[in-house]
Amino acid sequence: MKKSTAPASVRDLCLSHFKILKIPITPTDLDSVLDRADKESLSHLKFLDLLLGQQAASRRDRSVERRIREAEFEERKLLETFDWKFNPQIDRLQIEELASGDFIRRQSNLIFVGQAGVGKSHLIQAIGMRACAAGYRVLYCTSSGLLADLTASLADKTLPLRLRRYQRPELLIIDEFGFDRVERIESPQAAHLLYKVIVARHRRRSTALLTNIDFDGWSDYMGDAPLAMAFLDRLVEGAIIFKIKGKSYRATKAKPDKPPSNEQSAS
Image 1 (cartoon, helix red, strand yellow):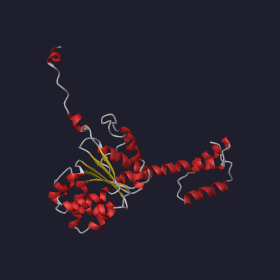
Image 2: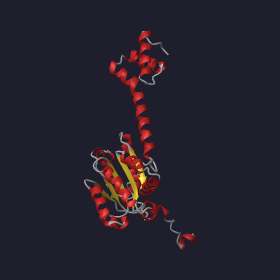
Image 3: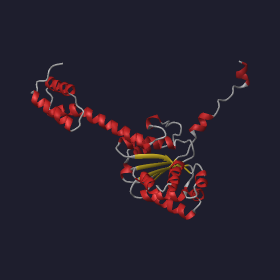
Image 4: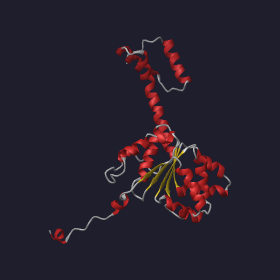
């Protein structure tokens, strides 16, 4: 490699600056960019872009990866891998708009209503992945997991601490709301605990809730009509409501292939 023509004192001073600022640029990295700048007569700004751009990109990638880990997604789903043809009534443009994260910036809630298997979890986790890439803090949980965590906190008196965990993220995703009535059986206070989470986030953060029961069934599920109404009011106020109708992808995949007809068997 051609030796840098920059004065050694200035070069060493720059390397010292990088070390103080904790920018991991090695002498080899610096010399390589200096050589290219000499050969291509690069402008000062282009030189800086080449020198710092890769470091900035690496740091962004690490930040995104950290946010994805902290989100605790069940699976790392992507919109690019969603089967849009299976239930073509799902509006891809609307989903892409949600994935832009604008509803999070506006602190609006998002509610997906639809039967199991239509793709709600895939879509919301893909939206959550995009939110992580855009710099938002996200936390994914199931309704039963959230309530089990909060119920356990009652016993060791850490409820305020646990509530703060669910209050902090810019986007809290609560999946499988209404999927399992055992939540109420195991914790008579489940509905009140869930209400505390929604109240703590109301008009401050975005909450995405996925459910297989329509709004008129929430009162029966929560077992407390006034509380269900208060819960619904706070969650739905200004929310984006996305109702998905269609076939169950999982159920379709689980169906056995049709047995061959007698004519086919005989051939």
